[in-house]
Image (cartoon, rainbow, N blue to C red; front, side, top):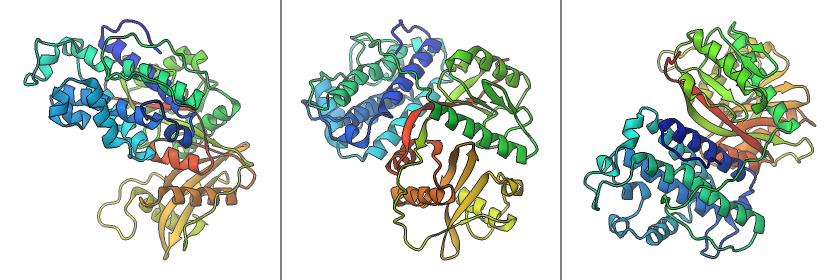
Length: 446
């Protein structure tokens, strides 16, 4: 994790991104039991540390928006105004200790992305303004520290502090003492380095996903180009699909940057994306901002087929254009009859002619209620675009994975997910491999 002094917006964003991904790389290695059942001397689990970081990060999001920090912390104003960090932290703990793990992880990711987005339009001068400039009516003496320090102390710095306790909990598997802090600026970040995660399985997952992106773009007449270190597509942008996917890790960052810079210079409209497969790029100088982070997943071939607990469901392969239209409407969340102008088609009939692609639909009462896309590359099968009813996500994931195993028996599954879907995937036998980041182009710098 970063240890250098933070004085500019660029340094702040870099430190936040680096320390966030180091924290996420540690969390994805932990099982649900490690995240929830091991407690320290004060009774906190790893999930409680996640909630703690979540609400302090949320407090600085509210701070930048000029909203009361006690509301961001989700504590009573009277408790906040005591300025007693232990009392504030205990209030957060007591209120959210029963929050389900999936919801805690999802909220943490959402709040973090909201903070990164909130920081994007701010200038160095904005971040050097004092605390009082953002919350002029909050009781207290003096103007307070610069906003940059407040944000750093409750994001990048805070991640580093709690990572040490999280690793101690996970390693020891026993009750350990930790003196929690609220995110103050009193101590220096820990010098903790992420492990390099590039096993053969993650390379297979990355390449499979790049091939799927190329398959969809090619079906629209926009084939991409595969190079050793990156896949790029220069002809146009499709919603939900990147124009570049990195295929190798930090060793090829310079070459990857050059390829992405050429895409920027080509003048594609803002809104196109880059999939940073190993979280090794900083694309902010090229006018990008992080869109979201996710986790590469792998399900070994020898893992038992999940038990399909959804009754009355029939999984079937999409065979023709009519079925494909119905599948895409369900995928978009608008099944049934047309209610207006149809959006442009993303999944076109050419995909059905590819023998390496299987689009599955789950039918209940003759209507499509769930679906998934499978694409094979070599010895692995990619799983993507899964959709299902909002209720009982774990059971629907198991049903989907079971259908995938039936269509490609004896082959491992790969993909990536985030939030609750990542948790459901792991409950269905997937293992976490490593983090990825999606960058979105937001301004014309070059």
